[in-house]
Length: 188
Image (cartoon, rainbow, N blue to C red; front, top):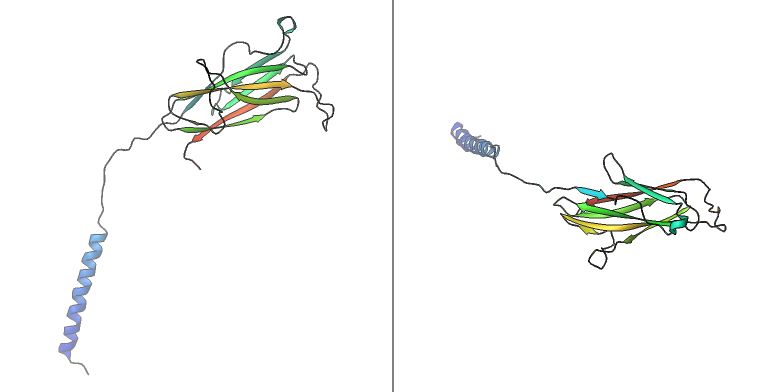
């Protein structure tokens, strides 16, 4: 049997230990406040199209085809719509597109073309004014305050052997879209 004095001797260390744990827990719950400023980069692009008629392969005396292009007037402004009218098989035209990256965070360019089967549409690197070519826009990393240009090439095709046959219809305007998407250079 234990005596009353030995019980008191056991209670005192337990009480001291409980007080130490309470004190330590009270210190762990304290708040740490940090003040500072963070300035983030900016991210924005602007598409541009030349003003006026777009060049084509027609001689002046037979110039009946016409190509028009415009940038979507509503956000996100990444859609270029191109319409070809008065064209015929073999008609070709070109539209130059510019992308100016006005942000500070670099971006990677991705292009998507949605066109009807009567139009063969692709893009090419544009010629620089001082000579040489701009880089291929697909997958290109563009940096702040720089711009890149490329040419959308359009050709009206006819293919009787395709399944189903590709036969452009007379008097039919053809419209297609190019989406120009940019993503932050280090985004997944």
